[in-house]
Length: 160
Image 1 (cartoon, rainbow, N blue to C red):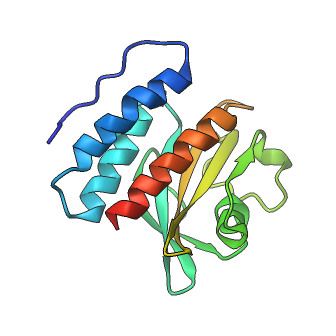
Image 2 (cartoon, rainbow, N blue to C red):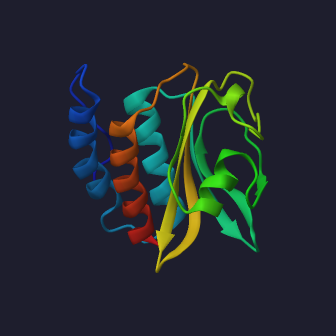
C-alpha cells in the first residue's frame, strides 16, 4: 500500500488529476475499511490541490451526516435538498458553485469558503453520499474538476 502521494508541480490540473488517480487506487488497495480509505482520499485531494475543505457526507436515515474530511470543523448534518450538498443529493447531479454567496440556500459552515463543488456518490443507482469540496477562492472549480471528481466519487462508491 502506498503511504504518500507524489504529484509533480504543474500548472495543469488535468495532469495533476491524471497523476493522482492511480495513486488513490493504490492507496486504497488492500484496505477494506471505508473510513480509512475515504479519509486518505480526502487528505490526498487536500494535499494535492490545497483546497479549503474536502470531505464526504453519507446518507444516514434520510439526512447527510458528516464523514471523513480534511479542513476546519464542519456542519455535521444537512437536510435533503438543503444547501449545495443537499441539492446535489436531491438532483443526483454534480453542482458547481462559482460564488457561494450567490447560491440560494447556501449553508455557510465556514465564512472563508468562497466556491464549492459537490458530487453525488452513487451506488446501485442510489445516492449514498456526496463528495464536497470548498475553496477559499471565487470561481475556483470548473468542468475539469467536475469530471475528475466524478471519477473519484466513483472510486469511493466502488470502495463501499
